[in-house]
Structure formats: C-alpha cells, structure tokens
Picture 1 (cartoon, rainbow, N blue to C red):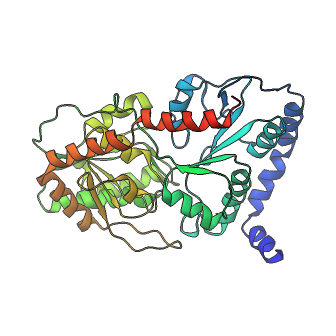
Picture 2 (picture 1 turned 120 degrees about the horizontal axis):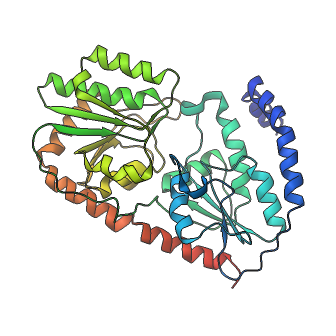
Picture 3 (picture 1 turned 135 degrees about the vertical axis):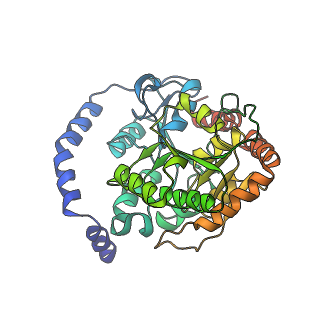
Length: 376
C-alpha cells in the first residue's frame, strides 16, 4: 500500500499540486452549492444529466468524448429531476467525484462510459495522475459502457477490475447524415487525416506517406483536418511539409463543427488514422459511414472497428512503453492497394458502418440499459 502511495506521489508534479491547491476554493464552493441543491428524483423512466459536459445548445466545436453526448441528448435531454447521471471517462465535468457522490446520496444511478486509459507511452510518469481519478469514478458506476473490448481490457489492467454490470458499446454514427455521395474515381487520390491531433507522429506519418507516394509518381492530395494540439504544431507541420517537398499536395482544414464533418469525409477517397492503440475512435467510424476506407495500425480498438475489406490495418510492435506507427512505405503500399479496388472497399466500409455502428442501434442499447436503471 505504501509503495503504491509513493508511486502515485512520484507521478504528481509540483505544477499539478499547485493547480490542485488553486482549484480547492472552487471545489469547496461547488460542494457547498451541491449540498444546498434540492434534488429528489421522482420521475418514472429514464431522466438524464450529463454533468454540464455539453456545450449549451450544441454550439461550437465539439470533439472527443463529448460528441457521443450529442447523440444521447437528442433523445434524452438534460432533465432537472434526473435519475441517471451519464458520464464519459474522456470528458468528465470538472468536479466529477463530488457530483457523483452527491447524486448517489440522492438515489441517482451512475452510468459510466469508459474510453481509454493512460499508459506510460502516452503519459509517462503522469500515467497514474490520469488514471487515479478515473479509477475512483468508475468504481462508483452502477453500469459501465465500454467503448470496445480493448477499452474494457485496458481498464481492468490499469484501473483494476470492478463488479458493475457492463456491455460493449462502440461509438456510433448517424448513417443518414454521414453517407456516401457520388464520387467518380478520377484524377488524384484524395487522402484525409482528421480529428484532434494530440501527438505529432499522427500527422508526421501521413505527411511522410504523401511524400513517398509523390516519389512514386502517384498523384495524391492530402486534406489535413482538425486541431493540431502538440506544442508548436502549426510551425512544425509547415516546416515538415516544406522539407518533404509536398506543399502542393497538402491542404489544411481548420477545426470543424460536427455539421461540417460529413462533407469533409465525402471529399476523400481514404482516411489515414495512424494513432497507436486508439481505444474506439469515432473518426474512422464516421469515415466508413461515408464510404471512405480506413488505413491505420492493427492496435487498440481498431481491429474491432475496421472489418475485412473496409480498409487495411498495418502491423506494428506491441508496447505500453513506446508508441509505434506504420512507416511511409507501408502506408503508401496500402493506399495503392485500396485505390486499385476502391469501389469494393468503399461499399464494404459503408456496409460495415450501417450494420454495426448506426446511431439507432447505439441508442436502442442505451435505452434498454436506462430503463433497467431508472425507477419503473
């Protein structure tokens, strides 16, 4: 027990302690307001709250764990007399533990949506700093939705096993909005890298593959869409593009709203998603719904998402201590193979999304669980 304490202590930097001290008054004020909030859920049937994780009205750029809440909130709008608190591990409210403890005292059930966890290759010594609050919140859950079997296995490995009932609930997509459009396979191959790019290798791997395709005289255009989030990212990408000699082959698309996403996918032939051990990424699911085959690494939750024919997953070493991603030649080879049979891959990608990741199926699964959790 003491060794575990010092392990956690070692992972908490002076800066982290400083920010925790700074937020202590806000935490105490939040607890004070909660305790003075009258809440006695009387409604029969599911009534949800999301812990203020949603941007009011769905405005602005919504990314990461909050995207799935938009789907839920359409059918289950946040209710003042809620009897189910639904939280996502990758987008918890600021004072989530205080909220959970307050809610449970009042008979509110906790539904926990578990995405990935921190591990050494991703967060280094801060791994336990990220996992500790997640572990405590997950322990309060009355029901757990794991976004993939990989998410479940990682949670059990890094957070410990729990007894709460659980199911796998892959992220979903509105297949009526995210759908293929008529697109003739002519001219250049249009590649897409999309989402929130937290690590530089996610972009570097794609840029190097574009340079390799150009070297092979393979006509290609990359749309690099979404947020570049590592320190100095914009300057880094600009310099890398110039160094690789692919200025004419790269177009930058800034952070986009969900309403803009379908058109971004529909303009592409192939999505390249090289993130290592990605737990259950929504971007490949949305791409496949638009008939866009996916190239990624055969790690994390990706093998559960990308079915045969819907793209190619490339082998890389397995490690928790170091990130790995496919090399430019492997990615370029996969691009050429997919483009040689693009119509078939496109149809397979769409069929995979329709049969396994539709919003209707995801909502039906949640509705069934909510009805079991809420008072009859």
